[in-house]
Length: 393
Image (cartoon, rainbow, N blue to C red; front, side):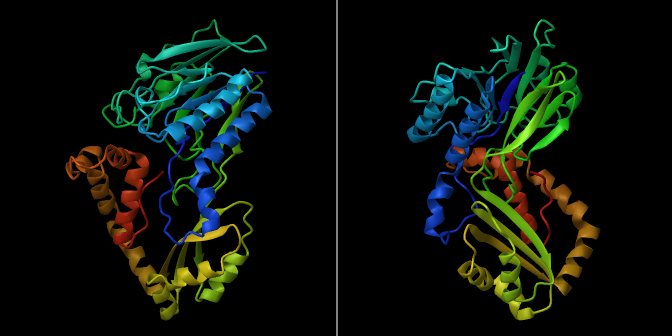
């Protein structure tokens, strides 16, 4: 029975964003190593499951400038798979395009890298099944040209053909290897391992076309369990099953009619995190003006942090009074479409580029061109306008 792991967007070494200097010291080490720990958990799981191979469809490393320590961690963990005879198929996305030109290490012998042109690797599993794996690596950090047409149609001589594609649904000329779902389906592949979108989602079943999401949430917008897919053969169909692997969780809660720090602490005390959980809280319908002012000036956040449960750390707190909430609802109904149109226009890659100095580091430019960076910009702008953010991860 064929069994493999699909792990998109590992972002090995990517630091968290949205944390301030008040993060307790006992959590700092765990946060700093979160992507490494998630990766190690993934390798442990692959060995435990004795999978036939592991797929990394893009953004394996956070940037092509990843330091030697990050490279050595990648080498060490991948060598563990090599020792177990488990092959790895890895493509580079917008965050790590051409990373192989800057590496100071040698990849283990089991690692197969996809070139910038679409190519196909083949293997025969321990059970004797013949598998074809087709993919590509980014040519630049935006990759505005779709490569779906370069993918060959399914080769009937193989038991399964699998596609690796780092991109998102869109039109030709959009950033990040735009594709249409029908174009993928027309290739008649048995499974598409997608990367780039950090939200786990299945776009199609039979065949499965799926994003595994990122391995570890990196900011407060990337909530909930994160991990990878274990893909198994079930009645001649490849079916994905999610496995949580992230050591640190981001969560958000929206509560109404909380009117004091005591009320808020009681709400938080009902949570029972099993691992380090970083929480964002949005309160609405607040009657007490003093409490609302305390939220806005940061005092309430300090108070709830002082009484935080073990393994639970509040990172963000917002609140709305009843009158403010009613006003915002009116704005949302009458003007949200206009603001959304304006934000969409401004947050195109070209518009952003026009406002960036040539002295801005490439890592910052890459981030602002990324879905994550645009999402954070949109969220910040909506917050300034007193609105909910109008984006999807």
